[in-house]
Length: 429
Image (tube, rainbow, N blue to C red):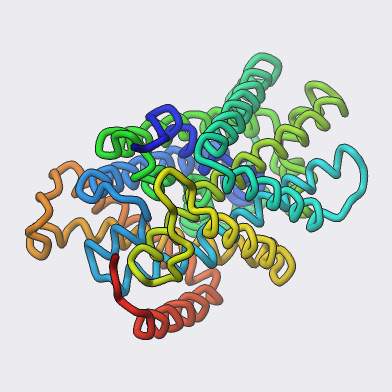
């Protein structure tokens, strides 16, 4: 019997989606795009995320098992593709965002309470959260639910503050580099907007932890995605209507998570006390994100262990969390803190997440002809899958043009994964 319900599932999705990125992205975008184009990018991002959520909702009904892309791609395309997705989740998809969120939380806390080593602070935070999620299912659930409630209240407070005290007139400023055109900047912005929306599929990774997975996993993804999309639009409206591109350009000197656009707005309204409160709020948001990653990621490794692709001790015992998998992800996140810069982790994560989720969308089109044991996907799900896959390919194409280092990185990762798959025992128990 699962321990998650619809409310916990929605909270899991919200916790995975909302991070500090929404308080940073507009500053980069405002250098080349007007307010109207920026808001349009977030609307398009929300619609594409909803298309992705609808795609995964159908996959969750067809395959009501934990594991996310690992499970879906193994069933819809080929076990080797699922294996690649599983390894990507282990090495990049969850461990890296855990490290990024923990580092950001520590940096924001130290910005308020005094100097400190952000990496050491992040290490302590990861160890603490790992212990919470490894002890038991009930403590894991209530820890995550509590952090999600705090995160939601903080975002709502920021929106209420901006709408009640801010300038809500349509922004008339022009971007710093107005003459560069809009096509390529808009496409590039969509890639990072898509990363800000990533996490809408969080419930799919822990599907078997739900009491009613076929009913609640799809609903959790769709409801959570819609709530976050609405919140993101309101946050960006507050930022764009109260800041100029020149002031928003502070993010270009963004260092160790100490200043976001939210800080500027909070300082304008409430002074230094407001900026400090914003730092504490952003830290809480990042803690919630790290916690969510440590809840859902280990379910992928437990599934891989159940299928014989990873050591059996990583499996979960009935009624218990996959403790060894939780500890493994925590350890990898700590390792990444010390061997990569945060910028390197961010650039690699975005491309991998978009790539494998697009493959899930493509996989739905193979069900009718190649998977007779599964019922045919509904037409509206296939329409959503086509929209999501097409937009993902377009975003990846533009990202590869501007970030050419992604191509060899993904190629090496795929090659190493295929070698690992060929050597791994294929025994299911």
